[in-house]
Image (cartoon, rainbow, N blue to C red):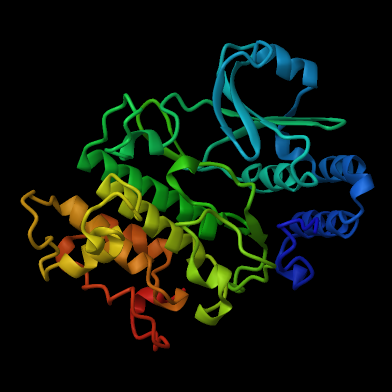
Length: 370
């Protein structure tokens, strides 16, 4: 199935937007309507880009992409999407060039990235500078992040890593920055952007370790601000970070709260310096780190049996993460509330409910609103 993941809510209540926004969404909807014919993929992408206007993004020829990457000499990373290469623009600026696999999908990831990140402007969201689409060749040009991805710095037991884990204060600032970036995507844009793949690998760090959310290949746009639940066929995301409702609708509707869950799981990995599920531990009670934390969490938000002094910033991260991974979406805070909790005093935080028990939620907490 060649499903474009930005189709949610496109046909609904376009009158809520300005003439320019109306025009934009009509373009997207028309593009989606003709997307299904696989043979016309290249034509459809061109029509989309022509009508979309590209919002000032630079369009490069494939020969220019080859030149700026020195014929793809320096590889920064690889994934199911393709490869990322280090490059340099004519003005000397360093860039990261994502070259998408020709065989992957039907161009959905390319369109998703341009349609979402191309409309964003926030210190905690990576900037898209330009793109290339030439026959079957597609590439995206981003600002360069010298410290790479967050996962390089948080896993203490990663034998091959030469980079030391970050300190608790730095991790707290990174967690706060990511929260602010997600709040912007959910509330600060003209259209709500749901990322659906928040994880350490997709958080990039600049020279000052300022975090920037990246990789919008699985994102969805919801242009109607008062519609929170989105329709979606099948699950998407990365195992270990996917919210329960994404693969089982019995837990609730898929919404921006699904990103909140992924954020909470990622924060636990930042706190523990390990994957949340660790099959190497000797004690089965320590197999799932978030549950171990909750089971040992005391009323003062310290960890029972821990010899280490837990700093206030880490305590706040623990409490916030436990709220974020509540089983039912309605029980999770919005990212606005997450930022507020992280910036506030530890004394003002409530003890989270047990996120590993999931009776029908009564949504009694003010955290769940929005």
